[in-house]
Length: 345
Image (cartoon, rainbow, N blue to C red; front, side, top):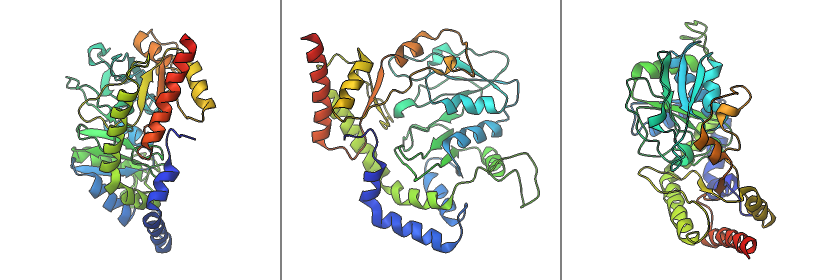
């Protein structure tokens, strides 16, 4: 099986160090926040003034928007092509997600198509598939959804990260983080993640239980020094794919500064047939995403966003994780060539 993501292979490569870190935490008896979380936050804050560990990427988005002061009745603009949590965090605060169409070349929110109104209070661009979204010229607050772009040097002043196990830097469960240069915002997020209490049992706001587990921080601290090498391998795999698939009838993704290649997503004719063919050959793929956010039940019916809607019918993510071998990349490319040769023959 050629897997789309392989957390087990990542663990196997670092098993002695991860096991030692886990045993150390378990023996300590301290399982929430603590020294490992503080150390991981300091290590992740290389390019930002503050890093705040949280319980998941979804909670990072929610905490970031809460700290920005988003309230019921506010509008927050985001992309129509993303994981549901991007819009779900907006809606959970009682605000209205307003969807913009994508740039068909990058899959990211098109900054030329922002439906800004007098009720717009923030913008949440997404660095989809690890490609940094185009800059947005605005005075509105921006919270970047960088769940798929951890490790990129192109992240802005405030962004939300996810350490879901399949991410470029993955935990052994859920974990997330806010990176920010805004000291006041970081302080509000720290308050939010601990039920709004400071000190314990003295509550100033209605927060949440959104703290990072110590075990996850300890595991992530073992993995983090390898992130740059893993990213370099992803970049190499992407370049290899572009060479191997040059003759295939696919639209291939292009490189860009800061791209960390969380996914290698092509536009494929007869996408669903191709995916079934690859599945028969034990090659995992995924569709990110089969339905755009503006057509999902909680937000539908939304206005037509043709670029996002078309993308959902064509996109296919191929394996690109750093533990793939050159032979496995060649197998994927050969299987794709076989499919289109058979269909045209």
